[in-house]
Image (cartoon, rainbow, N blue to C red):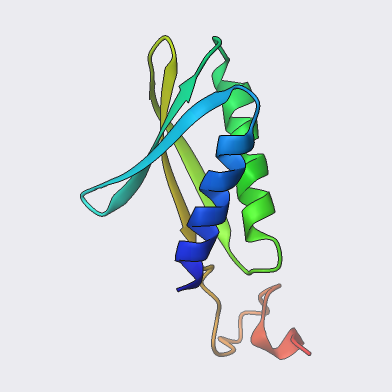
Length: 106
């Protein structure tokens, strides 16, 4: 499956990121969570930027969206709820002159 490859690439990119020491992915109730261990104290904004950069690199050439939601932070670990998903697209024209109408595709 393509999403498994994207997740593997994503975790590899995160493992190579500078402040991150270890990355663990777990599923709870069908939702993937990332546990990120860091050696130095890092702000949530900086960590989210690192995560999103790794996601963009792993999604390159694929039509996916990414969502990362901060859950909690300890002294040297961060927890995020992350998911890759396929965007929902319209399959027919509804007649409402939508900007993403199927009629405008080439």
